[in-house]
Length: 337
Image (tube, rainbow, N blue to C red; front, side):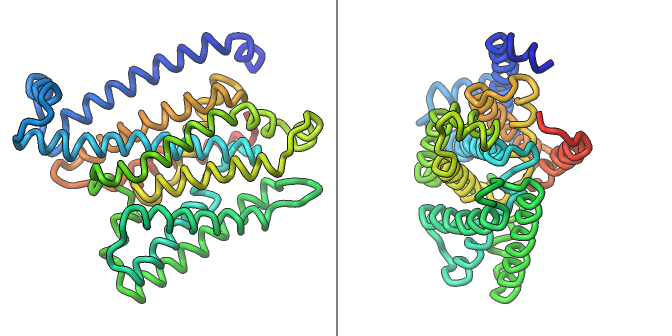
């Protein structure tokens, strides 16, 4: 199977790309049309052809739905690519920023900030999330890295679980002590209901830059994902490359968390699914992972809006229903693709 994939990579790449494109476009279209209020094709066409016309439909589609659709695309791509990079760095198919405590670090930092400041600007939220994610990553990787043997996969997962549990416990304690439930409950459940154009303008550039840089370093990530010894024998400075790629993970994860809140499994299941079709070359994996992650989040957000129209179903609930069986399947499979 692996040899067949290697031989037909370009064909498989474009086939998978075409399928994801259809899923993406249909998700984008339905997300514009359906929600608490549904619009006909004619109304939607008129709105998009005259976006500056003042009307109730324009307020809903252009000012509410369109920014959250763009946010869903950015968040899905960022989380999926961050997970793909983590899996390449650690050579572990079940690595994910959420499972390794990075999202928990962002959450704890944001809760601490809310304890002292009731109102936070979007740029300050991004900075706080980035600092928290960096602290969590440093702790997890320092506990699991050996200069001689590199990363121990089991220790990495255990360290991530320990740090995530510890940070979540601290976060809950601070939330209770400072009575922050109303401020952070929506963020903890994950959601795109509060997204607006100002948030997109501030955070989108960080995600886009992170995605572009990730693709530029895709070949180096492919080498790093093979083996520590092999990568060094090919002349790669593994420590420096790991630090660069991990910095991209932190930027992508913190930006996504700042937009939508704490979510797990997206960075786990998406890159693993893509790798089943295109092999281990990250020049193919990362763009398809970003595209599928964006399409996935579009559909998840749409489901959250239409399950109970007028109310928002938490993103984490829908993603967990999909992600948990996939995670259990990966553990049961017990091998790296």
